[in-house]
Image (tube, rainbow, N blue to C red; front, top):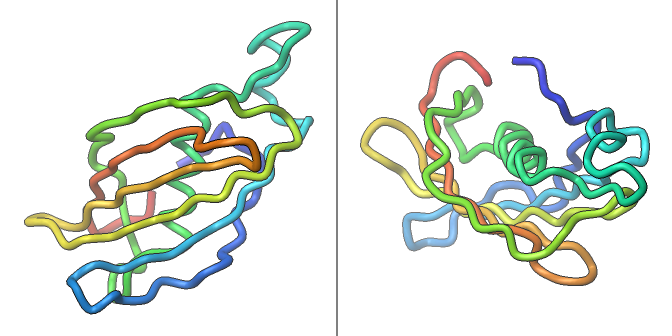
Amino acid sequence: MISPVLAQVKVVRPPAADGKGRVGAATAVTVGEDETVLPGHYPGFPIFPGVCVIECVRLSAVAAPPPGAESLALAEVESTRFLSPVFPGDELTVELTWSAAAEGWKCTAKVATVRAVAAQARLRFTTGKES
């Protein structure tokens, strides 16, 4: 899959089980001023689009999968909530919580900047071809 997001994901806390059937991980993603989506969103006042924030969650999930699920494919964005804007130069901290689901994995994510929580999302993944 080709991503519209140029930023690279850095795993800052590798996936680890919490003993309650969940797996936690954390990544960092820096939104560069060279992101191709910024010039049109919005001219003179660039804001990183919400769909790109969710793409950062997907990229983070693929970079920090739960043990035994190294090849994940996004099946569904179950819910999203955007809470504050993301600007060029922001570093996103993506906190992932994985739980096993009937046909794969559910990933709950909290995305934050130094200012505030920017978004919350819940994604569902299947195992198979990498997304």
